[in-house]
Image (cartoon, rainbow over all chains, first blue to last red; front, side, top):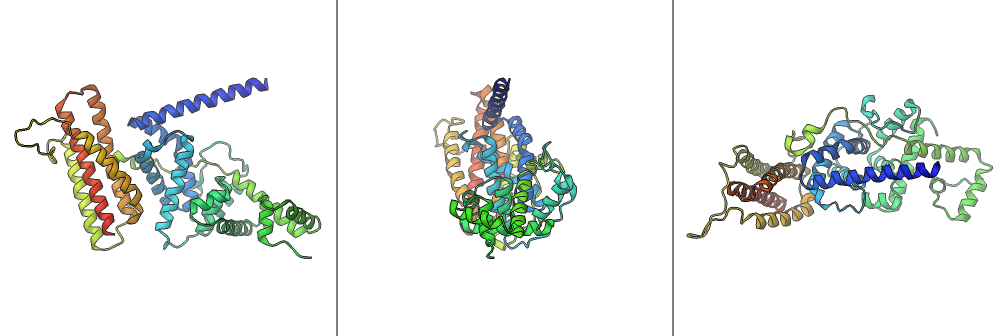
Length: 193
Length: 208
């Protein structure tokens, strides 16, 4: 039974992956409906990352637009070595970091994220308590921007220290400093310290 | 009692210590409740962060302003002085010309390159060189896009994307009617507009 379920799950994943590859190929061929489908499939993930990196809903919406425009422009550079979602995720991170680099003079702002900006798009976040989840999101949004970016990339998006360092164009030591600071501030602001 | 510093405790949580150092920290934690609470809280925080939803729903539908063919508003004015305002005007004029021409079905606006006197005009012959030149300029633009303010790159991206959508539509039409000279001429003009936009963009970036 377990083996059949594993086989079924793999078949489903392979089918979904093959279908996704086909949509990407159609989009690369210039079919607008296909790119619409890619947008629908990935906008939630892109928006979540942009919102957490910027802690600003309007800025996040701007970045989502920039991400999909850049993806549209560079679609023919996607060769399928990784999943499209992985490729798009990297585009999103780069767009967010580039935007911040160009906007260094903008002071950090305390989070003004309304509760409904944090509606989950997926169905089963593992942080079960909605109150805890909201407090956590707000606390992350309130971090200084470099600490926030580092902790989002490392602790939420799952990049390794070396990868975060490469993305942020800083040393691993600097990334660790940002993350340690982020953790300390989060624990303090959540009352967990 | 000497407590491990913040860096050492964080490295312990992240499994970055050598076996000997990790053992030393574990030995300390066995008898130090404050440090043990810190480690437990940090691990719980890490688990909670990793469990946040990977997707969030935008509060509004971004589709009309996200996909290039629908156009969008431009966020804030240009922050720098006269050269960029002039440059933005140039881009707007080029784009307005291109879009007007698109809206009129190519009946007005840029025309195909003039042929040698007496030489037969072959619609579509310039498509390939225009397309190749455009690809080369696009690569250059992508390398240099960060040389100027982000507003310039965004303006170029969106206007290029609008032209590219038009090119894709024409390609589909030409696939059904490959010998149609009007379609070939329209295609040439679109690729030429694309070149003009990219040349203009690179000229702006060169001005700094």
